[in-house]
Image (tube, rainbow, N blue to C red):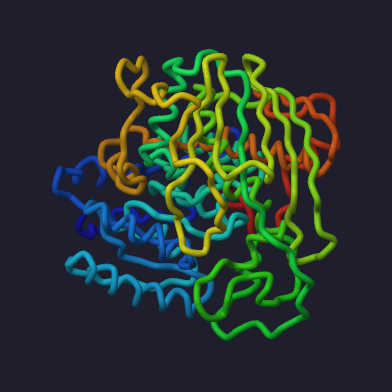
Length: 457
């Protein structure tokens, strides 16, 4: 897509009437309707330039053949500059001409550009909701790394904004684009193992470590903006990301920025479970959990854990780090197991497996012939998103589905924190008669950041 003159450049103030406290754009991106021919290319801005962006999101967008990345943004100036160099190599790898790429420290500069159609958001979890909402309200389509949001309150706001504005939002639940997860879901939804009775989900855990002392903020890192809506705490590399290189960052192990593996990999496996059980618009009615939480202030996400959930149809779901990493569905006619056959990035945790990526109690259960249900096929999650940007049809992991998967993970985390049984109302998206549990559905947002302020800008 070519740069276009800005008839009325979208800014943080070009919003019209307010509905339920949410601004709605006056200007819809007509460029996507007028210029979205079969040979057009989507112009993408990359927000967040860390490990996942470099190893997964930027390569995925470019390899689709449908888009160009024309802007990169990170609050760490070194990472932003490095991202542009990384793009140069990625374009060389695909033998494609590289367009001019601008470098930014503030994501809002990308949203104000009328020549950018969509953004990929690969930020830490606590920085998912605000830029995603701001992008939606600025008329951009969004690819958002999982989990959908850090809190259920954020998720409701973002989901509803997507529905009202009719933007295309795909969440990085890429297991939907992996053949074995689709095949398992088709088999289960076709009744191959009969009535599903229970599901076992295994997730890895991240280790803890003693707190590191205060360090000087590195040159080029806007640490205050990196902390964003979370509660401010002193800088140390252990809390943020490596100063050099792109190994697994420390923020994944701090509850101010991430809830741990229950939402990290949980977002993937819960989403697959909802897909396979045809419960994408639903969730648990009851949840009970326990977990070990370190007393450390920095690497303080959960360790070993055990969660029991009850789903419609009286399906019992057991989530534990003691299970192998993957999902096992038990029906009255047998079981089906599914897991990954690779990793999104080299630094993802590994888990010993005793079964192949797709297995069953009887190999005949995996026969693809005679399926009653066939689900959408995709060989690339980023390509699926970009195809949806052009067609305006829903992608494989849209906002309303991603919110339900994320909610189930967060509800599990709340049960782990409170360590007692909870009753969850899927319709009202609140716990029944439980003020302490409901208090954990949202978080205080540090000014001037957060979705509540983004909604009013």
